[in-house]
Length: 266
Picture 1 (spheres, helix red, strand yellow):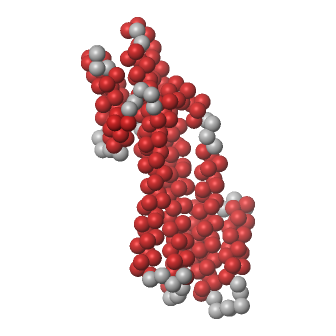
Picture 2 (cartoon, rainbow, N blue to C red):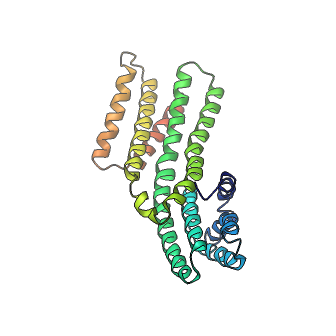
Picture 3 (cartoon, helix red, strand yellow):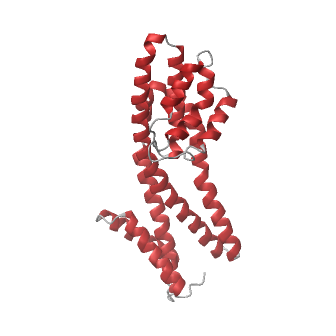
């Protein structure tokens, strides 16, 4: 980033972790967004503090998006504020109006993308991946308590890593994109990523269900891999007939509960 040094970027990043701490029904995350951007506004408007205060009030207006995507909007707003501060006085109202429009559009688009990916796809994927890792650990002879703690820690790390990376890198991307935000964002295949994440997590869940079913069965001649493959194939067939991933996850959970009630031993 050319106009924003590492120190300033770190300040905005740390503040962005608390963007929802000032949440209200009137402005949603607006006050939190203004708090996040305040150090940058003090820098670019240092020669016109009255304009800086007006800019801060403008950014405390209504704002709402997925909190993990806030860095992208912060970076874009920082770039546009820098341009407004450098422009002639008569050009500033037009730039401020353009900024409001872009900020509102970006927040809406990122809210949908962030909710669909992080809460609708990535969180379930991390959960089932942790379960699959725990199942593998127990099968390999690990202590149950150790495996459970390791799986829980893995879930937290796997979920938090891309969230923090996006919060940090989003500042750089949003700042660099500026007014080209919409065009640059459209280049990323978010929908394919969401679909692939959901289906991968579903296959892992079905595989774990297959292992649970095999463990309950007494027919030792049936290969475990065959049961897992059958469970995965059944899941894909169910999806082909329109059964939702949410219902399949519920079915997998029901299998796990039944296996536990049956005294499942790994």
